[in-house]
Image 1 (cartoon, rainbow, N blue to C red):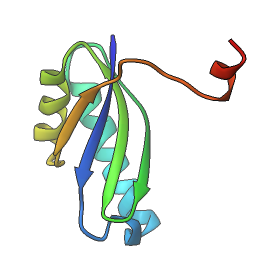
Image 2 (cartoon, rainbow, N blue to C red; image 1 turned 90 degrees about the horizontal axis):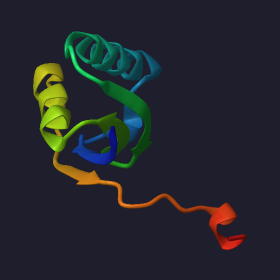
Image 3 (cartoon, helix red, strand yellow; image 1 turned 90 degrees about the vertical axis):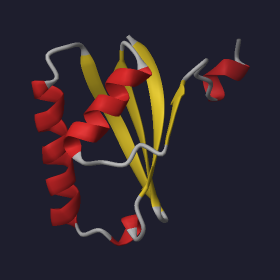
Image 4 (cartoon, one colour; image 1 turned 135 degrees about the vertical axis):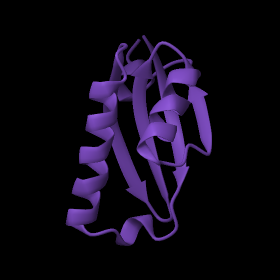
Length: 91
């Protein structure tokens, strides 16, 4: 599967309550379970008015399908070309 970063514009995202975030998470998991194809939600980051999500899927089309069926915005979907971190500097 390919890895994608999804940018979701959600005004007030950083002010969502724990219960609201739980509801969003539950809905996302339900949609993933119903897709009927390989898909993995890796992690999401709530920052300001956005939620940045890392998902794995066969294509961006499947990412957009997940968003559509879940009622989530998917303002930008970008395939990850490489992953780097402190360990990358070590060679």
